[in-house]
Image (tube, rainbow, N blue to C red; front, side, top):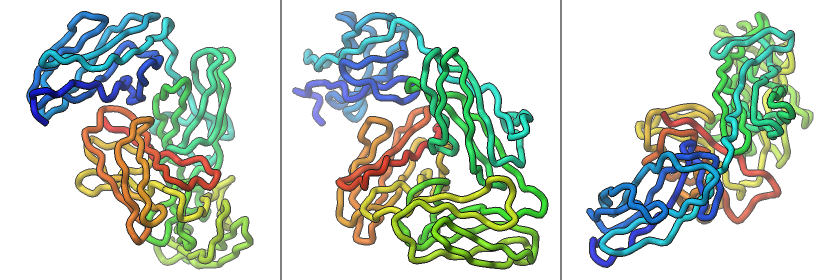
Length: 376
Protein backbone atom coordinates (compact mmCIF):
# COMPACT_ATOMS: atom_id res chain seq x y z
CA UNK A 1 0.00 0.00 0.00
CA UNK A 2 1.61 3.29 -1.11
CA UNK A 3 1.74 6.29 1.14
CA UNK A 4 0.63 8.57 -1.72
CA UNK A 5 -2.96 8.99 -2.85
CA UNK A 6 -4.34 6.62 -0.22
CA UNK A 7 -7.58 7.79 1.34
CA UNK A 8 -7.55 6.84 5.04
CA UNK A 9 -10.43 4.81 6.40
CA UNK A 10 -11.97 3.74 9.70
CA UNK A 11 -12.63 0.04 9.29
CA UNK A 12 -13.93 -0.95 12.71
CA UNK A 13 -15.03 0.53 16.03
CA UNK A 14 -15.40 -1.73 19.07
CA UNK A 15 -16.15 -1.24 22.75
CA UNK A 16 -13.78 -2.45 25.52
CA UNK A 17 -15.55 -5.82 25.64
CA UNK A 18 -14.95 -6.42 21.93
CA UNK A 19 -18.49 -5.68 20.72
CA UNK A 20 -18.72 -3.97 17.35
CA UNK A 21 -20.15 -0.44 17.39
CA UNK A 22 -21.83 0.25 14.04
CA UNK A 23 -21.68 3.51 12.17
CA UNK A 24 -24.71 5.47 13.48
CA UNK A 25 -24.86 2.93 16.30
CA UNK A 26 -25.33 3.33 20.06
CA UNK A 27 -22.96 2.27 22.82
CA UNK A 28 -22.97 2.40 26.59
CA UNK A 29 -19.19 2.77 26.77
CA UNK A 30 -17.22 6.03 26.85
CA UNK A 31 -14.10 4.29 25.48
CA UNK A 32 -13.90 3.09 21.89
CA UNK A 33 -11.22 1.13 20.01
CA UNK A 34 -10.68 2.43 16.47
CA UNK A 35 -8.88 0.59 13.66
CA UNK A 36 -8.35 1.45 10.03
CA UNK A 37 -6.07 1.85 7.02
CA UNK A 38 -3.93 4.57 5.46
CA UNK A 39 -0.74 4.87 3.40
CA UNK A 40 2.18 2.81 4.66
CA UNK A 41 3.97 4.83 7.33
CA UNK A 42 1.55 7.74 7.04
CA UNK A 43 0.76 9.99 9.99
CA UNK A 44 -2.94 9.67 10.76
CA UNK A 45 -4.81 12.38 12.66
CA UNK A 46 -7.77 11.17 14.72
CA UNK A 47 -10.50 13.80 14.70
CA UNK A 48 -13.43 14.03 17.12
CA UNK A 49 -16.07 16.64 16.39
CA UNK A 50 -13.64 18.70 14.33
CA UNK A 51 -10.80 18.62 16.88
CA UNK A 52 -7.62 16.61 16.34
CA UNK A 53 -7.25 14.46 19.46
CA UNK A 54 -4.26 12.33 18.46
CA UNK A 55 -1.82 11.44 15.69
CA UNK A 56 -0.85 7.81 15.08
CA UNK A 57 1.31 6.07 12.48
CA UNK A 58 -0.09 3.60 9.96
CA UNK A 59 2.52 0.88 10.28
CA UNK A 60 2.26 -1.48 7.32
CA UNK A 61 -0.78 0.50 6.21
CA UNK A 62 -2.83 -0.13 9.37
CA UNK A 63 -3.44 2.06 12.41
CA UNK A 64 -5.14 1.73 15.82
CA UNK A 65 -6.24 4.21 18.45
CA UNK A 66 -8.18 4.08 21.74
CA UNK A 67 -10.58 7.01 22.10
CA UNK A 68 -11.40 7.67 25.76
CA UNK A 69 -13.63 9.82 27.97
CA UNK A 70 -16.41 10.42 25.47
CA UNK A 71 -19.26 12.52 26.83
CA UNK A 72 -22.49 10.69 27.64
CA UNK A 73 -25.79 11.62 26.07
CA UNK A 74 -24.12 12.97 22.94
CA UNK A 75 -23.67 12.09 19.28
CA UNK A 76 -19.98 11.87 18.39
CA UNK A 77 -18.67 12.26 14.84
CA UNK A 78 -15.27 10.62 14.31
CA UNK A 79 -12.99 10.64 11.30
CA UNK A 80 -9.29 10.48 10.40
CA UNK A 81 -7.02 12.47 8.09
CA UNK A 82 -3.67 11.73 6.45
CA UNK A 83 -1.77 13.45 3.64
CA UNK A 84 -4.58 16.00 3.32
CA UNK A 85 -7.24 13.32 2.72
CA UNK A 86 -10.21 12.80 5.08
CA UNK A 87 -11.95 9.50 5.73
CA UNK A 88 -15.70 9.06 5.87
CA UNK A 89 -17.35 9.96 9.17
CA UNK A 90 -18.16 7.34 11.78
CA UNK A 91 -21.05 8.52 13.95
CA UNK A 92 -21.68 7.05 17.40
CA UNK A 93 -24.17 7.90 20.14
CA UNK A 94 -23.08 7.29 23.73
CA UNK A 95 -25.95 6.49 26.10
CA UNK A 96 -26.78 9.14 28.67
CA UNK A 97 -27.03 6.55 31.46
CA UNK A 98 -24.41 3.94 32.23
CA UNK A 99 -25.94 0.46 32.12
CA UNK A 100 -25.02 -1.73 35.08
CA UNK A 101 -22.83 -4.67 34.16
CA UNK A 102 -24.49 -7.95 35.23
CA UNK A 103 -22.86 -9.79 38.11
CA UNK A 104 -23.02 -13.29 39.53
CA UNK A 105 -22.96 -12.83 43.31
CA UNK A 106 -23.59 -16.40 44.48
CA UNK A 107 -24.17 -19.95 43.29
CA UNK A 108 -26.14 -22.48 45.38
CA UNK A 109 -26.42 -26.25 45.07
CA UNK A 110 -29.77 -28.11 45.14
CA UNK A 111 -29.71 -28.16 48.96
CA UNK A 112 -29.18 -24.40 49.20
CA UNK A 113 -25.49 -24.64 50.11
CA UNK A 114 -23.15 -21.95 48.78
CA UNK A 115 -20.71 -23.11 46.09
CA UNK A 116 -17.85 -20.57 46.13
CA UNK A 117 -16.16 -19.28 42.99
CA UNK A 118 -13.38 -21.75 42.32
CA UNK A 119 -15.05 -24.29 44.63
CA UNK A 120 -16.41 -27.77 44.08
CA UNK A 121 -19.71 -29.59 44.52
CA UNK A 122 -21.32 -32.96 43.85
CA UNK A 123 -24.50 -31.29 42.54
CA UNK A 124 -25.25 -31.36 38.81
CA UNK A 125 -27.99 -28.72 39.22
CA UNK A 126 -26.90 -25.27 40.39
CA UNK A 127 -28.70 -21.99 41.06
CA UNK A 128 -26.68 -18.88 40.12
CA UNK A 129 -28.03 -15.46 41.12
CA UNK A 130 -26.86 -11.88 40.97
CA UNK A 131 -27.56 -8.32 39.91
CA UNK A 132 -28.19 -6.52 36.63
CA UNK A 133 -29.74 -3.32 35.35
CA UNK A 134 -33.34 -2.98 36.56
CA UNK A 135 -35.68 -4.62 34.05
CA UNK A 136 -32.91 -6.36 32.11
CA UNK A 137 -33.30 -9.77 30.53
CA UNK A 138 -30.44 -11.97 31.73
CA UNK A 139 -29.04 -14.97 29.82
CA UNK A 140 -27.04 -17.55 31.76
CA UNK A 141 -24.34 -19.57 29.99
CA UNK A 142 -22.47 -22.67 31.12
CA UNK A 143 -19.28 -23.46 29.21
CA UNK A 144 -20.36 -21.06 26.48
CA UNK A 145 -23.80 -22.58 25.93
CA UNK A 146 -27.04 -20.81 26.80
CA UNK A 147 -28.65 -22.76 29.66
CA UNK A 148 -31.17 -20.46 31.34
CA UNK A 149 -32.81 -17.04 31.30
CA UNK A 150 -34.02 -14.70 34.02
CA UNK A 151 -35.55 -11.23 34.43
CA UNK A 152 -34.03 -8.63 36.77
CA UNK A 153 -37.31 -6.89 37.62
CA UNK A 154 -35.86 -5.21 40.71
CA UNK A 155 -32.18 -5.34 39.74
CA UNK A 156 -31.68 -8.90 40.99
CA UNK A 157 -32.06 -12.21 39.15
CA UNK A 158 -31.95 -15.97 39.84
CA UNK A 159 -31.84 -18.99 37.51
CA UNK A 160 -31.22 -22.74 37.50
CA UNK A 161 -28.81 -24.70 35.29
CA UNK A 162 -29.17 -28.46 34.97
CA UNK A 163 -27.26 -31.49 33.76
CA UNK A 164 -23.72 -30.35 34.55
CA UNK A 165 -21.10 -32.92 33.67
CA UNK A 166 -19.46 -34.70 36.60
CA UNK A 167 -15.74 -34.77 37.29
CA UNK A 168 -15.48 -31.62 35.20
CA UNK A 169 -14.75 -27.93 35.44
CA UNK A 170 -17.57 -25.56 34.49
CA UNK A 171 -17.60 -21.81 33.88
CA UNK A 172 -20.87 -19.95 34.53
CA UNK A 173 -21.43 -16.48 33.10
CA UNK A 174 -24.39 -14.13 32.63
CA UNK A 175 -25.13 -11.63 29.89
CA UNK A 176 -27.52 -8.66 29.80
CA UNK A 177 -27.75 -5.64 27.49
CA UNK A 178 -24.78 -6.98 25.48
CA UNK A 179 -22.55 -6.91 28.56
CA UNK A 180 -20.94 -9.92 30.21
CA UNK A 181 -20.67 -10.70 33.91
CA UNK A 182 -17.81 -12.13 35.90
CA UNK A 183 -17.10 -15.83 35.36
CA UNK A 184 -17.99 -18.16 38.25
CA UNK A 185 -15.82 -21.29 38.14
CA UNK A 186 -17.13 -24.54 39.63
CA UNK A 187 -15.81 -28.09 39.64
CA UNK A 188 -18.49 -30.76 39.80
CA UNK A 189 -16.99 -33.71 41.64
CA UNK A 190 -17.86 -37.34 41.88
CA UNK A 191 -20.28 -39.14 44.17
CA UNK A 192 -18.52 -42.21 45.54
CA UNK A 193 -19.60 -45.36 43.76
CA UNK A 194 -21.33 -43.53 40.90
CA UNK A 195 -20.74 -43.87 37.17
CA UNK A 196 -20.52 -40.76 35.04
CA UNK A 197 -19.83 -39.48 31.53
CA UNK A 198 -16.60 -37.52 31.09
CA UNK A 199 -16.83 -36.79 27.35
CA UNK A 200 -18.77 -37.41 24.16
CA UNK A 201 -16.52 -37.36 21.10
CA UNK A 202 -17.19 -37.34 17.36
CA UNK A 203 -15.66 -39.82 14.91
CA UNK A 204 -12.50 -37.68 14.60
CA UNK A 205 -11.97 -37.56 18.36
CA UNK A 206 -13.21 -33.99 18.95
CA UNK A 207 -15.13 -33.37 22.17
CA UNK A 208 -18.75 -32.35 21.58
CA UNK A 209 -19.81 -29.61 24.04
CA UNK A 210 -22.79 -30.30 26.28
CA UNK A 211 -25.92 -29.83 24.10
CA UNK A 212 -23.60 -29.00 21.18
CA UNK A 213 -23.84 -29.89 17.49
CA UNK A 214 -22.01 -32.60 15.58
CA UNK A 215 -22.20 -33.78 11.98
CA UNK A 216 -20.75 -37.15 12.99
CA UNK A 217 -23.15 -40.10 12.87
CA UNK A 218 -20.82 -42.06 15.14
CA UNK A 219 -19.89 -40.88 18.64
CA UNK A 220 -17.88 -42.35 21.49
CA UNK A 221 -19.24 -42.08 25.03
CA UNK A 222 -16.38 -42.02 27.53
CA UNK A 223 -16.64 -42.15 31.29
CA UNK A 224 -15.52 -43.36 34.70
CA UNK A 225 -16.89 -45.67 37.38
CA UNK A 226 -15.54 -47.78 40.21
CA UNK A 227 -13.06 -50.37 38.82
CA UNK A 228 -14.72 -53.39 37.17
CA UNK A 229 -18.23 -52.01 37.71
CA UNK A 230 -20.81 -52.79 34.98
CA UNK A 231 -22.19 -49.64 33.34
CA UNK A 232 -25.25 -49.42 31.10
CA UNK A 233 -25.55 -46.53 28.66
CA UNK A 234 -29.03 -45.40 27.58
CA UNK A 235 -30.27 -42.77 25.11
CA UNK A 236 -33.65 -41.21 24.45
CA UNK A 237 -33.50 -42.97 21.06
CA UNK A 238 -33.73 -46.41 22.72
CA UNK A 239 -30.03 -47.27 22.70
CA UNK A 240 -28.99 -49.57 25.54
CA UNK A 241 -25.35 -50.70 25.68
CA UNK A 242 -23.57 -52.40 28.58
CA UNK A 243 -19.84 -52.11 29.27
CA UNK A 244 -17.53 -52.84 32.21
CA UNK A 245 -15.11 -50.30 33.65
CA UNK A 246 -11.47 -51.40 33.51
CA UNK A 247 -9.04 -51.71 36.42
CA UNK A 248 -8.57 -47.93 36.47
CA UNK A 249 -12.31 -47.23 36.37
CA UNK A 250 -12.35 -46.13 32.72
CA UNK A 251 -15.05 -47.21 30.26
CA UNK A 252 -16.21 -46.29 26.76
CA UNK A 253 -18.72 -47.35 24.16
CA UNK A 254 -19.61 -46.32 20.62
CA UNK A 255 -22.98 -45.30 19.21
CA UNK A 256 -23.21 -45.60 15.42
CA UNK A 257 -25.79 -44.92 12.73
CA UNK A 258 -27.12 -41.81 14.44
CA UNK A 259 -29.82 -39.75 12.74
CA UNK A 260 -30.48 -36.01 12.78
CA UNK A 261 -32.02 -35.46 16.21
CA UNK A 262 -31.26 -34.34 19.77
CA UNK A 263 -29.76 -37.09 21.93
CA UNK A 264 -29.78 -37.41 25.72
CA UNK A 265 -27.33 -39.98 27.08
CA UNK A 266 -27.61 -41.35 30.62
CA UNK A 267 -25.75 -44.07 32.53
CA UNK A 268 -26.83 -46.50 35.21
CA UNK A 269 -25.82 -45.72 38.81
CA UNK A 270 -25.18 -42.04 38.04
CA UNK A 271 -25.81 -39.26 40.54
CA UNK A 272 -28.60 -36.71 40.38
CA UNK A 273 -29.63 -35.50 36.94
CA UNK A 274 -26.26 -36.30 35.35
CA UNK A 275 -26.38 -36.84 31.58
CA UNK A 276 -24.71 -36.00 28.28
CA UNK A 277 -26.47 -34.19 25.45
CA UNK A 278 -25.77 -33.40 21.80
CA UNK A 279 -27.58 -32.82 18.52
CA UNK A 280 -26.65 -34.73 15.40
CA UNK A 281 -27.06 -32.33 12.45
CA UNK A 282 -26.92 -32.27 8.68
CA UNK A 283 -23.22 -32.17 7.64
CA UNK A 284 -23.96 -29.05 5.57
CA UNK A 285 -24.50 -27.04 8.76
CA UNK A 286 -21.24 -25.19 9.54
CA UNK A 287 -19.82 -25.95 12.99
CA UNK A 288 -16.80 -24.73 14.95
CA UNK A 289 -15.30 -27.82 16.58
CA UNK A 290 -12.18 -26.45 18.24
CA UNK A 291 -9.91 -23.45 18.77
CA UNK A 292 -6.14 -23.87 19.19
CA UNK A 293 -3.46 -21.38 20.16
CA UNK A 294 -0.37 -20.71 18.05
CA UNK A 295 1.40 -23.71 19.65
CA UNK A 296 -1.45 -26.09 18.89
CA UNK A 297 -2.84 -26.24 22.43
CA UNK A 298 -6.66 -26.58 22.52
CA UNK A 299 -8.71 -23.68 23.91
CA UNK A 300 -12.04 -25.04 25.18
CA UNK A 301 -15.30 -23.17 24.93
CA UNK A 302 -15.36 -20.53 27.66
CA UNK A 303 -11.68 -21.22 28.29
CA UNK A 304 -8.88 -18.67 28.33
CA UNK A 305 -5.55 -18.03 26.64
CA UNK A 306 -2.78 -15.45 26.65
CA UNK A 307 -2.15 -16.09 22.95
CA UNK A 308 -3.22 -13.35 20.53
CA UNK A 309 -3.28 -15.76 17.57
CA UNK A 310 -5.57 -18.79 17.29
CA UNK A 311 -6.75 -21.25 14.67
CA UNK A 312 -10.41 -22.23 14.50
CA UNK A 313 -11.44 -25.47 12.83
CA UNK A 314 -14.76 -27.10 12.07
CA UNK A 315 -16.96 -28.86 9.56
CA UNK A 316 -19.35 -27.87 6.78
CA UNK A 317 -20.45 -28.64 3.22
CA UNK A 318 -17.49 -29.61 1.02
CA UNK A 319 -16.44 -26.77 -1.30
CA UNK A 320 -18.53 -24.07 0.40
CA UNK A 321 -17.03 -20.72 1.40
CA UNK A 322 -18.22 -19.85 4.91
CA UNK A 323 -18.46 -16.62 6.90
CA UNK A 324 -16.59 -16.55 10.21
CA UNK A 325 -17.47 -13.77 12.66
CA UNK A 326 -16.03 -12.55 15.96
CA UNK A 327 -19.21 -11.15 17.47
CA UNK A 328 -20.45 -9.00 14.55
CA UNK A 329 -17.11 -8.48 12.77
CA UNK A 330 -16.32 -10.79 9.82
CA UNK A 331 -12.81 -12.16 10.37
CA UNK A 332 -12.55 -14.59 7.49
CA UNK A 333 -14.11 -16.73 4.79
CA UNK A 334 -12.79 -20.27 5.18
CA UNK A 335 -13.36 -22.79 2.41
CA UNK A 336 -14.46 -26.29 3.37
CA UNK A 337 -12.18 -28.95 1.90
CA UNK A 338 -13.26 -32.14 0.16
CA UNK A 339 -13.36 -33.97 3.50
CA UNK A 340 -15.88 -31.48 4.90
CA UNK A 341 -13.32 -29.81 7.19
CA UNK A 342 -12.20 -26.16 7.37
CA UNK A 343 -9.64 -24.18 9.36
CA UNK A 344 -8.95 -20.46 9.68
CA UNK A 345 -6.28 -18.45 11.57
CA UNK A 346 -7.28 -15.32 13.51
CA UNK A 347 -4.62 -12.96 14.86
CA UNK A 348 -4.25 -9.68 16.79
CA UNK A 349 -6.93 -10.62 19.32
CA UNK A 350 -7.47 -8.04 22.05
CA UNK A 351 -7.91 -8.54 25.80
CA UNK A 352 -11.59 -9.47 25.76
CA UNK A 353 -14.11 -12.29 25.54
CA UNK A 354 -14.19 -13.28 21.88
CA UNK A 355 -17.36 -14.87 20.54
CA UNK A 356 -16.96 -16.72 17.24
CA UNK A 357 -19.75 -17.98 15.00
CA UNK A 358 -19.63 -19.55 11.55
CA UNK A 359 -22.39 -19.56 8.95
CA UNK A 360 -23.01 -20.72 5.41
CA UNK A 361 -25.82 -21.21 2.93
CA UNK A 362 -27.46 -23.95 5.03
CA UNK A 363 -28.89 -23.29 8.48
CA UNK A 364 -31.29 -26.17 9.01
CA UNK A 365 -33.59 -23.96 11.08
CA UNK A 366 -31.11 -24.18 13.97
CA UNK A 367 -29.55 -21.36 15.97
CA UNK A 368 -25.78 -21.33 15.25
CA UNK A 369 -23.75 -22.16 18.34
CA UNK A 370 -21.09 -19.75 19.57
CA UNK A 371 -17.51 -20.71 20.40
CA UNK A 372 -16.15 -18.21 22.86
CA UNK A 373 -13.11 -17.83 25.08
CA UNK A 374 -11.25 -15.14 26.99
CA UNK A 375 -7.97 -13.61 25.77
CA UNK A 376 -6.14 -11.85 28.59
